[in-house]
Picture 1 (cartoon, rainbow, N blue to C red):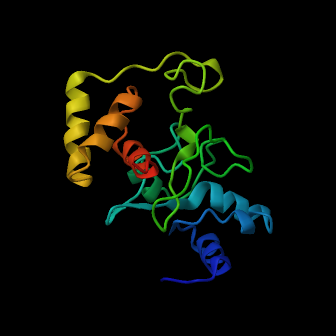
Picture 2 (cartoon, rainbow, N blue to C red):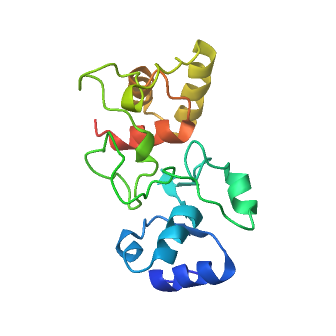
Length: 182
């Protein structure tokens, strides 16, 4: 089904306990119903395009939520507090200057401030411990995978890998590359 009415998608997801695959966050509809807020927080699977590749997150409800496979298998969805990109208030520390595709860039909630913005760039939110740096082998593997996606953009790929020495998520690194315009 490819409906253009967001309300219809929310009603259908509510009736069938289904998942909504979209690039919209439904922030405008969350104000209409408490049930819809729950559906938006627990049953929304957002996607993005990297080049012409359709990508969904490996962890749709955040770091402490289920994996994508578990998320899609679950019959009854449980709440994972403060894990989803929609929680009524921005939890984004870094926002790219502009989206680089027609879809919204996903999972900004886990971003750290850019280098040079003060503080230790490897520190997580609220003074959490320093994150583990990637190994050389893992960095080389990520570089090869990113270059498969971003052919001929070696400079951008290398820049992002140097700038984000702790990030091990291919999707997040891809989003960061898309956010740069140089």
